[in-house]
Length: 288
Image (cartoon, rainbow, N blue to C red; front, side, top):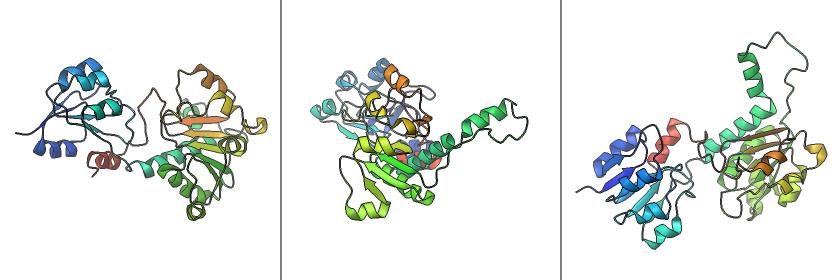
């Protein structure tokens, strides 16, 4: 008999075809997220749970599924799962590491270039039929070439961003609890700096730290205020991780003066653009 599993939301057909051969699956929903109560009801009697990053798999859900043997999270991150509770119950928890490195680095540069050259503003201006003709100072942006790029979090994604920065002849500095080896620093043309020094000197700051208790609200009001006043009108921040909360009024007030800030995802808004390619979704579904 095939094991029964719950897939909280419809995934790619190719992945469903594979699962059909090996499991008796139920899809919780197709165009919306399940509520916690719905997950609790549907996961009872299931041996497997295929969850998405938008699903908060907490103690209450885990306790409601005594037959559960595995929680397979269709995401690189797994902060949406109560790992300690799953461990107590002997439930295996898996994720899909490594598949988003290159695509997230690509998107990081899309964000940086978009805000540096004011592409969203120009696009909206044109769509609203406001463009009447060429003007010398219309949507003046900032140049990227030769600027100092500060990378906070020099893991897989941070390194991929650094490699792309070399094409712009940028000075690359980084802050990370674990310093790269001399050979790695040479490969990525990157120099280590304390976080405060990076914030006070970088023209562009990009954040790629994993979300954990140490990085939650990593860039606080106090950290933002470390940026030199003369840099505040030209600094760009790109955020590709769940570090901020858009409900944090202090954070919003801190960046009111900021020249440009862009983010793919907020800590309490889990949807993101980085994995939105068919190739990446296929990789997530079939990660070894």
